[in-house]
Amino acid sequence: MPHLTIEYSANLDPSGDLAGLCLRLRMALLQTGLAEEGALRVRALPCPHYAVADLLPENAFAALVLRIGAGRSPDDKRRMGEMVMQAATAHFATLLAAPHFALSLDIVENDAALSWKSNSIHPRLRGKG
Amino acid sequence: MPHLTIEYSANLDPSGDLAGLCLRLRMALLQTGLAEEGALRVRALPCPHYAVADLLPENAFAALVLRIGAGRSPDDKRRMGEMVMQAATAHFATLLAAPHFALSLDIVENDAALSWKSNSIHPRLRGKG
Amino acid sequence: MPHLTIEYSANLDPSGDLAGLCLRLRMALLQTGLAEEGALRVRALPCPHYAVADLLPENAFAALVLRIGAGRSPDDKRRMGEMVMQAATAHFATLLAAPHFALSLDIVENDAALSWKSNSIHPRLRGKG
Image 1 (cartoon, rainbow over the protein chains, first blue to last red):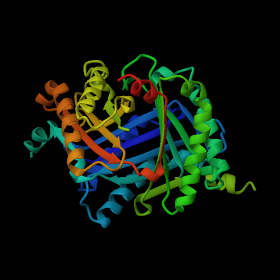
Image 2 (image 1 turned 180 degrees about the vertical axis):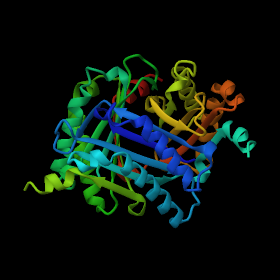
Image 3 (image 1 turned 120 degrees about the vertical axis):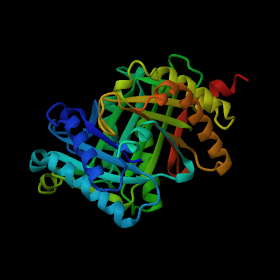
Image 4 (image 1 turned 45 degrees about the vertical axis):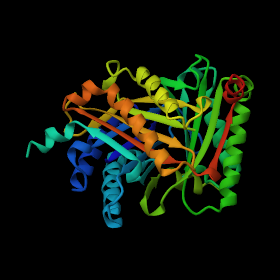
């Protein structure tokens, strides 16, 4: 944890710079101080088929879902969401200034009893400091 | 809101007309009267790798997840689901008549406290009427 | 049900053999004795854009989400998760032995009141036995 998945309309390639967005959101998550570097997994998935709002060809969306482990305080979760949303809003400032773009973020908490992980990156990064 | 994501086995391209399905499901959502046009984001994601049921090469699936904001009544949610499922069932009538297709729909509600959005389409469409 | 979706960083193609993983996890689900063959839908989605941990180019992830119907006991859910995770761990043994891979599994339960399905595979397979 955390996992951040971005589904987006394929008309954002390449101008939306989704690779750049992944980097930016990874940094935002790191800067919350609430996520360990080795656990960060930000990714973006283009959707080749879509129907957005009134179907203008320039209509586009990016839908972010942040999946986190249970146990953070409501304040911490709100702060995480705000920092991620702020970074995404900055990334898409030009698109949001035109009347064809919808950005969203939802946080989903996992059930600790139904969650498994095996991460070989952690030992490497924890050993660094 | 609402977001409707369709994951499907890539063997449905192109005969399954997923672009047409997106249009049809957008219309179904609009006709519920429970969703604002500017908020509609229907999309479909092909899955290049899959293992369905008994692994016959013609086995296929479409798995719909509708993500909505919290606060609708149980009746409204049931009606939304039924209308979307009806439209998807009509779209896939031929496939459902043969013994190799699995269609599903699940509705997931967001937590309003952990949901953010920025939508530049709304002002344009709200200004229309 | 059950649905098992694997999101993975695209640098796992083709060496990660995601098609083989789908087959292996389908078999693991079948062997739990808790899932009907006709209902199995395992699939994998490559993510072309991603930012993982400290951004080394060899960093990679596979994130599994298993979506099941409500009503199974905590013990059965735990057993399902353990068997799926065990199969995924075996599949990725080489990657997990190197310090650049993150594997995860989360189980999510559907709300029976907000779930619809139409499956034309079931009659064919149920008729077999």
